[in-house]
Length: 144
Image 1 (cartoon, rainbow, N blue to C red):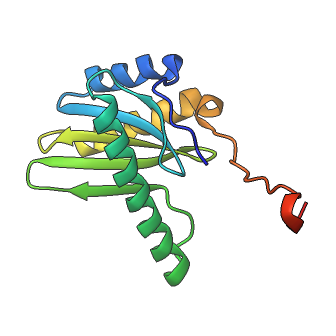
Image 2 (spheres, rainbow, N blue to C red; image 1 turned 90 degrees about the vertical axis):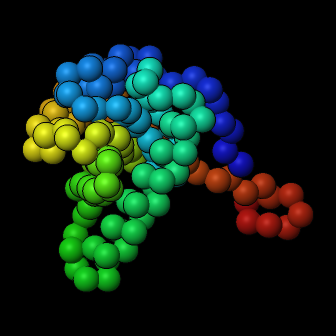
């Protein structure tokens, strides 16, 4: 069972705020774990919407991984979704984490990609999450 918390990594939160503030047209930024939990979020997004964005980004990453596996494309580096009025950028951010950014259609997509890459490079180790392990109990004759 995974426990949900309302706290995020304050050291990363302010960096995400910087990304949102630096790139015109950027609305929200979230760092999420592979299993869809919010690790950090910009102040521009509510906790509830950050959790929704994390779930969406996890799904997109999963779809992209499937394409890579089936068609021999390798590891997913970035997913970009273009909507009528928005962009969704999702980049691998560290061991077990991803950076998801929502921006207006007018954002400079190349500038955004560079800014996301730079952020990931700057904070590398802080973005990694440990793999969650489910431990089985020996009670009831199960594996121990």
